[in-house]
Length: 281
Ligand SMILES: [Zn+2]
Image (cartoon, rainbow, N blue to C red; front, side):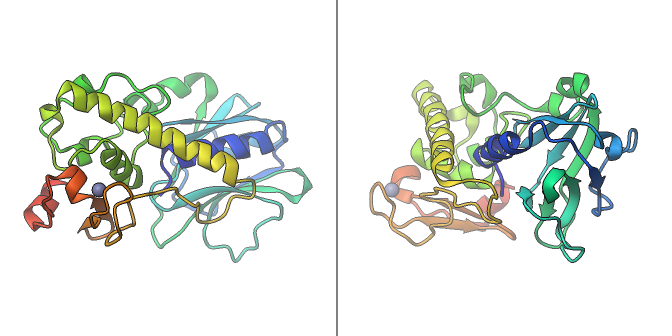
């Protein structure tokens, strides 16, 4: 589940490793991954890569061709750099960018669905791309004052993951940020006090930035299939809260789990009501 810190560290590490490399060939075995047709992605061939950056959870791979490739990993994708070219058996590959010295930049996707996407856009028009232009401000490093942004009837758990409201947070980091700020995931955005929006903003900076600091120390290229996320609450259902010792509770959805500490976040109540679960969809 790559979110802002995972996309940022990937962009930094892989960007450093590939910038200046001239692309040899590009292949797109994921038939539905590339959403644009003109120009074809082979426009990158013979041109140097000039950088890899990020907006929200989207990678922007710039090239000397004057075109950039936007890539969204969705829930199960990875962008990885390998020292050897993929065997034809790597069914996870959606996009293969071959570089000198047998190296290969790969967009891969785990699981059965093909949801990750890529688009080729003129570099000069990246900022006005139809997807990127809809994104809210970045959740890190310097998110704006959150009160006006979150002024919504939707619960924090939902509104914080809305990329049009604020960009970069998903199901892992929303649990961590809300726990750090001691806020209920069920609280409506519009009901936050000034102190609470301040605490939430601080928690966002602290946790997303802290994750990045952690990755800077821990990770090098090649990046592993599974990144070691420094989580304290998410994926820790049933364990002791690292802050107060209460048991971390969870609400289960069909394909993910929301975790929180009742003592710190919901006035001691364990909220397992299915109607609440539906509310958070
Ligand atoms: Zn706690």
